[in-house]
Amino acid sequence: MITVEAAPFSYSFPPDKVALIVIDMQRDFVEPGGFGDTLGNDVARLKAIIPTVAALIGLFREKGWPVIHTREGHRPDLSDLPPAKRGRGNPTLRIGDEGPMGRILIQGEAGHAIVPELAPVEGEIVIDKPGKGSFYATGLAAHLARIGITHLVIAGVTTEVCVQTTMREANDRGFDCLLIEDATESYFAAFKAATLDMIRAQGAIVGWTAPLAALVAAVA
Ligand code: C5J
Image: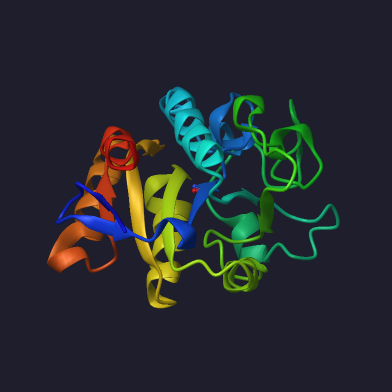
């Protein structure tokens, strides 16, 4: 077992049963003109974590541990987009509309791609998901079962939406999850802080959190 100094108490994982899930590090969330921007958010906050996420991915690749990427998005015919999701909020462009990086949040468009610095390499699993959680309407659970994963290290955006939803889904399915604090970000600093608190509360009711440095120190 490898033990990480984490909160609310140390997190231990078997190195042959751990995987990294990098959630939605797509141009649509971190670059101007994408989905996050159309909703009125400051995307610069999210772009800032790219080097830390890259270092985390590098650590897993170096160790030969599985790296899984997710992408939020929809089919070009919008058949997997609930009207409630398309109608939500007051964005300048809605999901499926043509934007500067192609159609907003649509599979295959430039904005849907993972940022080049974090691009998946051959052999890494990429999960396309229509919802906020990574387990809903995807093959993620089957992939994790097939490769014998019991512990998940989690990174990506946004902390209180897709990251938190995925972590709760994973927790309910029996995975022990560690969220890397400086490898996740929200458009709202207060929401990130509150989410980290909620995850760790009541004796790690959803899971653990730790900075990347703590994980690096543990695996050294
Ligand atoms: C959002 C996400 N925030 N990836 N998606 O709509 O968190």
